[in-house]
Image 1: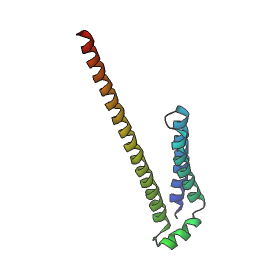
Image 2: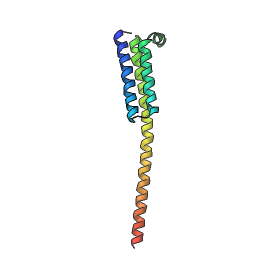
Image 3: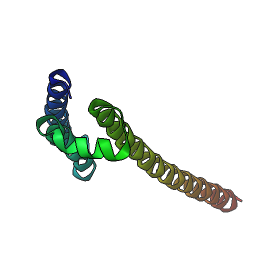
Length: 119
């Protein structure tokens, strides 16, 4: 792994940790959601300081170079996170749709009650 890539990973790790900590402090992200990003940042940090552990994984999987392995892992982890976010988003959309339907039914019942009271 080149020195440039190691420096980029190190800087990326610190910037990610700083940004996530700032968002948690401002209350813009929940602590349990920030845990993923802190662990991701820790992975970047460990990889930038001790890249040798990836050599074993790289040889085992058959990836051409260590830097390709780093990018492969990062892409894979982010795709998993994206999929989990899609699941959460789908659940929330379902809940919102259910709530909107309940509100619409209650408003319809209220309108019927008002019409029956007037006559």
